[in-house]
Length: 132
Image 1 (cartoon, rainbow, N blue to C red):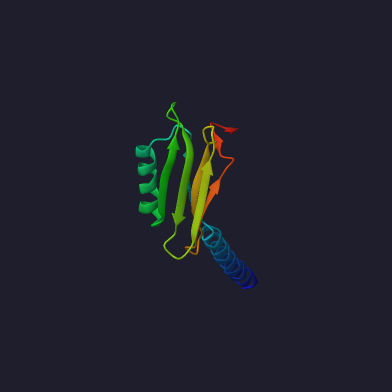
Image 2: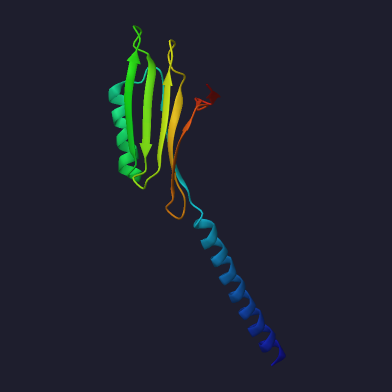
């Protein structure tokens, strides 16, 4: 009888421990974030930017509007304005202009586990494992 009681107690403890582990795993899985970051280079074309804009719209319903203000003789962008709008009142703008081609940068959208969107610009993107 004593062995049966100990056995039943151990079974109950194991069941309770497995339930705690399941809850902890569920909480870990709830912290999933999704981030898309797209690079823009001095040689980016209108067609490339238009295609990249579709990614943000399709995945996050974020508007990514751009205007190429100036391109030099080498067909490199020397002036550009980008506006990101999450359609919830948050608008971010990045504008660059100069005599030399723009430096590569990226535009990103990140969605957290609660559905909150953050948009932004990274002026130090990593390309092929190296910072620009």
